[in-house]
Image (cartoon, rainbow, N blue to C red; front, side):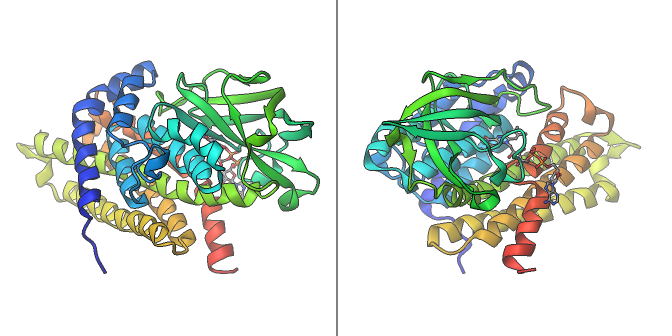
Length: 383
Ligand SMILES: Cc1cc2nc3c(=O)[nH]c(=O)nc-3n(C[C@H](O)[C@H](O)[C@H](O)COP(=O)(O)OP(=O)(O)OC[C@H]3O[C@@H](n4cnc5c(N)ncnc54)[C@H](O)[C@@H]3O)c2cc1C
């Protein structure tokens, strides 16, 4: 068993640590206030090679492993939750799908700009009546001549409508059948194509600089070559990508938990009551020790899931358990972190209040904690 990061993995970690210190952390509070995605920062992340780490070099990426990417997601999310989710969403879903199932032509056209950071991708599955039950989607694509004609509405789509958002890969019904037997395909829909509209930006309680929008397709036409992978195998394809994004979300939670621990420890050392630092009170020490313990455990789970993916092993159980545990860890850390900060913890000028609003999301996105537990019961425990 080897617990040491490789030279490349350590380099990525150091690069991201420096980058968040100098470029992201100074902006995080302002981004939370103004809700603006920092395009210049994204561009720099692209230039540094942070955006497409596991994508082969010939398609604009770094040609490194997924563990390196997961470490980068953890670090960027520690700097800012919005940038972290934009990054993990683009790489684990559209880029991952294109890299795994795309034709050479699709990779040349769509993957290179995403992996180099010039553009950002989105993935559209969720609909009003299809959240946890992905098989309930109703967006339909019908082949007419050489074109897919798409009608339907997607909701809650990350990265959609950003200035540099080039495409969304959507799951659409392309054949008959009900429930899990419904025939679903994944289709690449470029931004700006006729009949494809974005709804207004949702107003969220956190991740304010990460845009989330509705997608509306009204007689939207794309060439038939925009089908990704095999027709009607879309369900299995996006399930594969969602398994990767689960590690991404777990890394996102891990980064947030680490950020929470860092500010809470610093505050505990600095704040004095009853004539001494509150860090000298055992009640505060226990909270910090518990945070450290859970973060360490979450990191082992997250890195193991990424490592298993890199080895070509089955990582269904580890990615699912890592996502549940890391997201719940960051929430527990945020609660305890605010408690350590006392009244200052609920004041806007202290980052802990922002973290407290931001940790909740990861228990919901990409399969809620309930759905993940059901997945473990069904697919791992075979209950
Ligand atoms: C900020 C944000 C960004 C998002 N980005 C994207 C994106 O980029 N692309 C995309 O496709 N989607 C995206 N989503 C959608 C997200 O993945 C869904 O919100 C999530 O899967 C849950 O679906 P839902 O909100 O419809 O909740 P529901 O499915 O309605 O669930 C409501 C509650 O019921 C519980 N529940 C449901 N079914 C069961 C069951 N069988 N057993 C027990 N409990 C159950 C759930 O756990 C939850 O507690 C995003 C959502 C948000 C909030």
